[in-house]
Length: 272
Image 1: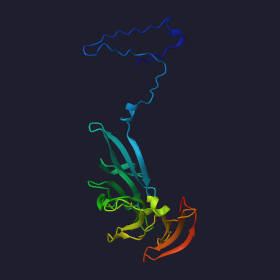
Image 2: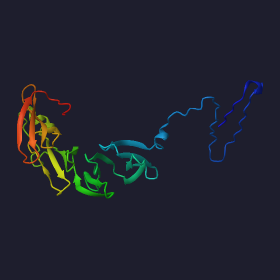
Image 3: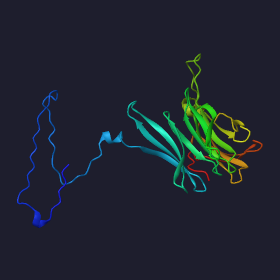
Image 4: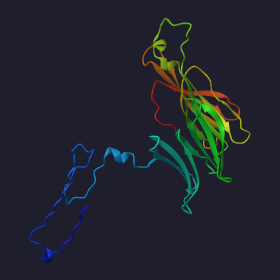
């Protein structure tokens, strides 16, 4: 690297740089000659990708005090990317906890009161393991083992219950390899997938399902007081428009489900 700064009166009539390079044994006579440049920019190379630590995502508690951030770092000896989950106190700008996983960390969610942090990591078997980190004791524990096809994790307003969806893909029976497909619903396998809304309570460790059925519960949202869920469900139709969306309310205390509305709109973007 050659950096030179001169003023006008100090400039010489001629600048010259001579480079002499001799191939060493085993180099096959191949030598890369350096080139001078007045533009010292470094263009991003593929190798640079392996030198960068990536921020995969972050979550800030509702009171703005606590930060959970997922950082991906390269383990170059084993050629893999490890994931670090770090907890930071934004008031003191200090890191309070760190967890490292070679199988990834995802779906981390602060409880509304900021007392708990929920997150998933890859299980040793199949699926994922679900964990809770307790801010008061700076400890964590596994609460669900080898959960599969789960998503849409959402805390209740009081921070005691975690709701989520579980997708159960349709499995063909091995003893019946041939199936007569009478209608459109038989040919579209995704219509035969079942999606249920499940729950987990921090106090008491209750774990179960709120819904069951043959059609997808696509999305759900919790009422501000936490007394019910508003759930959408898609029902296939054999004639146009080939699908119907139902809106249901489900009581979080009794589990009572009531259909309140239906529409032929297939895609519902966001519930609020």
